[in-house]
Length: 109
Image 1: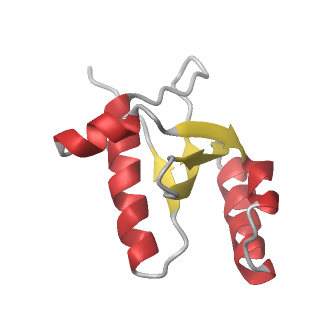
Image 2: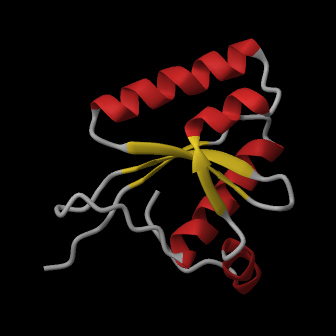
């Protein structure tokens, strides 16, 4: 997932998106099958160098977000990226898919 221009409403709501530790997923009542799939996703992404967290919004939308650090080792999550994650997570949840997303930083020369 790469940040693109998102709708104004999604950008506004993005400000309320909250990053939480991945372990929070264990308390939200996912089925054991869904939780196991999220755990596999987390392990795979962490082996590839990503940081994995739960990103959630007040309306109940959530996603497991793998964020790849910049060259300096930082993870940058701006409002546009949150808005894109929100839009994609909502679509996936409406299609009864687990919202497992990866955010890659783009580097401009």
